Length: 238
Image (cartoon, rainbow, N blue to C red; front, side, top):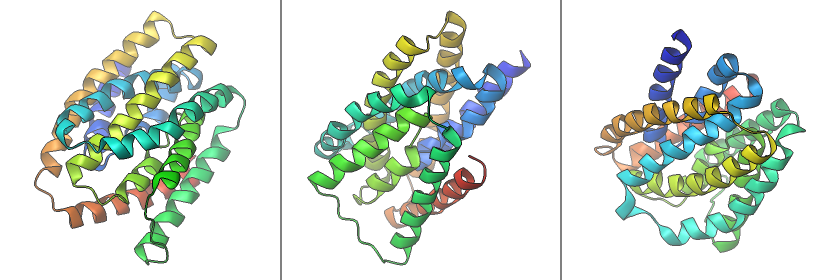
C-alpha cells in the first residue's frame, strides 16, 4: 500500500513536470519504479504508463499539433524504437544514459551560446527521430533529446507539448508490443502501469495550467534550463 501511494504521488509530480516541459516524467519515475517493482519490469511498466500519459498530453493541444513535422520524425523513430527495444536486455543502461546526458548538455550549451543554429529539415528530423527512437527503446526514455529537437522548431508551448507527445505515443505503442513479446508483463505489472497512467493524466492537466499563460521566450528558456539539469543528472546518476 505504501509503495502504491509513493508511486501515485511520484507519477503525478512527474507528469506535471512532463506536461509543462514536454519531457522528464520517465527520468523521474524510473528510479522509483526500479526500487518498487524491480529493474527488469520498470521499463516495460513505465512504457505502458507513458503511453497513457502522452495520450493526455496530445489531447490538451490536439488542434495545434504540427502533423507534417510529427510524421517526418516518426518515419525514423518507429523502426529504430523496435530495434532499440530488442537490444534492451543486453546493453549496459548506465553507459547509454551517460551518452544521452552528455549529448543533451552539449546541445543546450551550443544552442545557448549560439555556436549552433539547428534548423530542422526533413533529413535532420528523420535522423533525429531515428536516434530518439533507438535510445527510447534501449533505455526506456530519450524524452529530453526529443524535446531538444522539437524545441528547435520554435513552436508555441502547447503545440510543442502536443506534437512531441504524438511521436512519443507512437514509439510507446511499438515498444510495449516488443517488451511484451520478449519480456512479458503479468497482470500485476499491467495494473501498476494503468495506475501510473491515471496519475499521469491528472498531473498532465495540472502542468497544462502552468504553460497556457507562459510566453514562448520564457518557455524556451525554462525548457533549456531543465534540459541542462536533466542532462547533468543522467551523467552523474545514470
